[in-house]
Length: 468
Image (tube, rainbow, N blue to C red):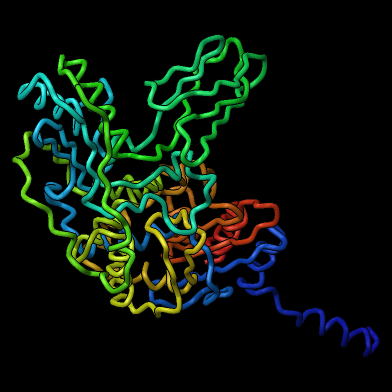
């Protein structure tokens, strides 16, 4: 027979409770990414919190910001009708050609373009006149606010941080082709400082362009037998670039250009002044009739692109489109619309701050509990099912195509990703092992060495799914 002391010890050991799910999740996060801050809220279909870790902590959401921008668009913009407010127009003003943008990024100058083609506008000008003076890119539909406050300057030369403008062509990306043993190919808009070399081994190429510079430095190596590599560079003045491309097309059609390629901007100070927020855009003098217009497809398709591919430029333009509802089209006016939507969703003002519409700004903050509240509010809206259909599906498509493959969440999780320096985010809905539907928001910030916390968040959500 065991001695009393030993028996008491055995009873105490047997009474030790197993770790709760929240404790298990905390352990996963702490082990997977020591030193980082983590916030995670998971709720069931009735809104009860299954896990709540630093639920009211303020986290940088990265591209989770697009959740709030697109929800505001679904709630306030006509997204299913032809986009008559967007697109591009061309007109003749005196002897000048004016290419005007209206806040859409889907126009294309590609040779194989089939929709929203700049060539359509070039054809209209060529049919009207054989000689013009200046070709002007006009983006005055929005104030000149090309980059979000708080975006890192080193993102400016990348496609992720390309400039924002009401007049945008080809996603405002300048394309370079690097092939072994050949000069770098481009359309010549920027100058190229070619520092690449052909040498054995995997291709390792990079590019940079200093703010305000017209020179792109390309360096690295490419193997002698490698296929050509494509690099995409962010453009600093989208309106000027669009006019430059139109001028090239006009010359191809035999139109003589006697003047210059120029850009016409609207100063941003009116949109930034709190006293003018919500004011109408400055009055414009009467303009000559439009020669031709590009009218893109309904915004719903573009919102799906924003969410599935996490397209930053399109999200920023959507925020400015929100800003035209009762204002100047400024960032501040767009944020005012988002704020009203969040208030309708019952989210406290202290739970969020946004400086942009895409998530590139390091000034953005949101709490996990606020994000879940918005996601649950979206579920109750008549358009909620359609909005959720824009989210990437784990292991299937979009920015989640390579995540959750071969796990119990493959095809069972729909969520918006987010990635920025030392920041990872994931928020949406999942179906747990039991079939329960859970809504969640998960954030990892301040990863040591700038490391991403995506793997830690995935592991935590898999543990939650397995336990429910």
